[in-house]
Length: 131
Image 1 (tube, one colour):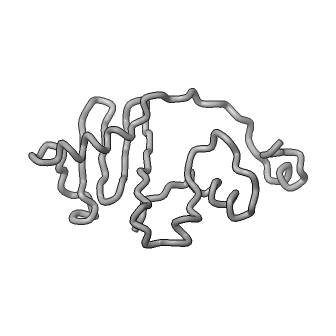
Image 2 (cartoon, one colour; image 1 turned 30 degrees about the vertical axis):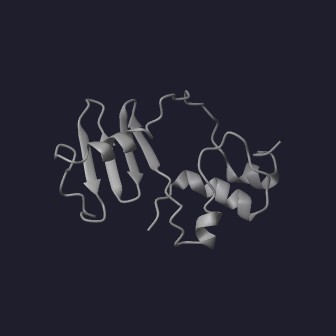
């Protein structure tokens, strides 16, 4: 399996529809992965932010969680797909934790308030995603 995220859907559909790439979009097109599902080069992390300093990072066979209060969890998804054994405090995993921590964003952009998107407005052309 390969880790992918919902934010990868928009760039994927954009590429599949031969639309110009939109600048500033997070996520990666899944087209290379669709064309070569067994390509070992696809090793991108999936990062989820649950609050200001609470992160979940999945990369390859690892799942790392950093809680807002500083608590940590680390799971080897290949050996423990149900995530029963927390390896974060066991010896020998410091390198894995440090590597996964490198993917935590150091800069966070503020949330942008947007108006609701109504499909009728999209279909009529009133709402434009591209200028």
